[in-house]
Image (cartoon, rainbow, N blue to C red):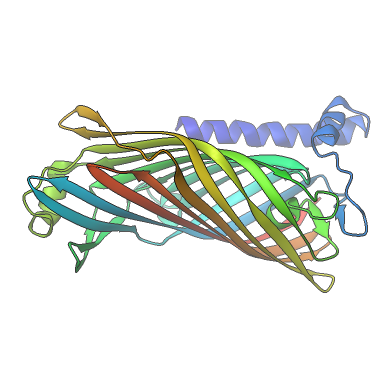
Length: 336
């Protein structure tokens, strides 16, 4: 409930700021502040900022999470693959210049309170030169896809996961390449162009397991092994890669980016019977973020599709966990 109130207040602030800007004229303090945040020296032959300050973008999407988990215990090695079912989510993004907030919830939550909680909150400020994003998601519908190389396809309600991710970036070729053209649609890319990127990231993940319910749901498949009640992982590092916008005519654009990451600091814990143990971490862990998108842009109206894949290692040693998380979005928006 508190998270919903925070998002509601942020939406009100953005709406009130817009109304204040309209009433006070171009020289209002609010306008000057956001002009500063969205200031750009982009070459207008390559990218231009849309004249509209506000946009609303309803969206339909899915999120898919895959955990590849290996337990070692009682002299045996066990390997399991947990997959989150693709869940249809409805949501909306509200933007003022480069500042965007958004929420998505699984469709069943809009009509009743049944089913698992699968919700995502996001906030971002994308600029041509630098920017950042924040997201927090909850997932609670997993399937035991296989266990010890045997396929089970067993649906579980005993596993819940939470992900928090923050990322900041710097664009080297910011005069010609527009990062927000692909993700917040506050700019329009006029010519095909790419750029190298560099940035910092922070992530925190929690996997909560109801072990008594897990034994009831899949005890025969999992065998007589002691299972963790919670796995956590926190990491901080740098990333860098390359992004490109392909302009196809005056209304269409494709985006692709590949950004490998290196964790410089990482901590993880595993909880057995309320006793926490530290997870063994490698000196340097590698990860990757892949983004793809297609955009149709016609002045006040726009539509598109985006997909983001994140691959990370959460821990090694007693429990090895590899996380693959995919988000897809289909959206239609308008500016004013």
